[in-house]
Each structure stands twice: as structure tokens, then as C-alpha cells.
Image 1 (spheres, rainbow, N blue to C red):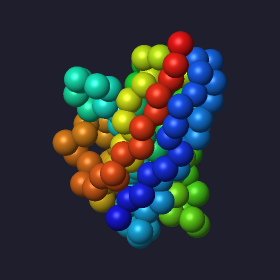
Image 2 (image 1 turned 90 degrees about the vertical axis):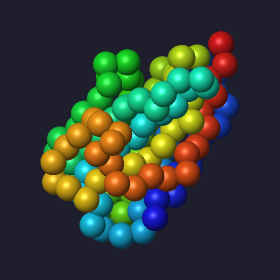
Image 3 (image 1 turned 30 degrees about the vertical axis):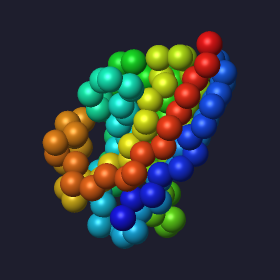
Image 4 (image 1 turned 135 degrees about the vertical axis):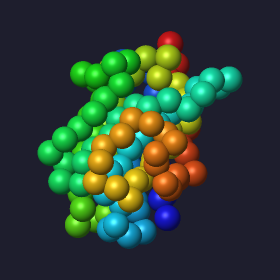
Length: 120
């Protein structure tokens, strides 16, 4: 129900844009999480249904921008000034709730993940 794409290999300082297409419009809060090798899956960003409220992990604040286009059932993650420590599999997630969350346990649906590799 969630299809993420846009990952790839980029040099440090570069940019990438991830996209996540949802199969339906009843996913209210959307988010991006990431999982680095050998580490737990961590919150990166989330966005409300209207797009008026966005939330970011401190590690990505000021460099990543989450946005959504409800007409296309798609959420985006624009990543700039990428660092080697941003290397991870990035997962799109969705909640059937109006309440925002940064807790992965509160997201109901997950995409398959897309790999982002940042070389130094």
C-alpha cells in the first residue's frame, strides 16, 4: 500500500528526493523513518494530513524537508547537505489517525524501504 523510491548513491553534501506513493487517501499522518546498518529504525520526519504541521528528528532538522501532495497520494522527503551518517534504508510509513506521532509503533503501514548511501 506504500511504495517508496528515490534512493541511491550520493556524495556527501549532495541531495536526494525520496517519494512514497500511497494506495489510498485514508492515510492521515505520514512519516519517514530510517534504519542504518546494525541499528534500530529511527524517526526522521512526519507530516500532518493538511501538510501544515511537520516534525523532524534533531539530526535532520534544517537539512530535510517533508511534504505531501494529497491529490497524488504521495509524500516526499527532500534531503540536502547529506552526510555519511545519513546512510540508511529509508522507510515510508502511514497512520490511520489524525494525531501526529514520532513513534514507529504507532504507524500502521510501512513501505518496502529505499536505500540511501552517502559517500565521504
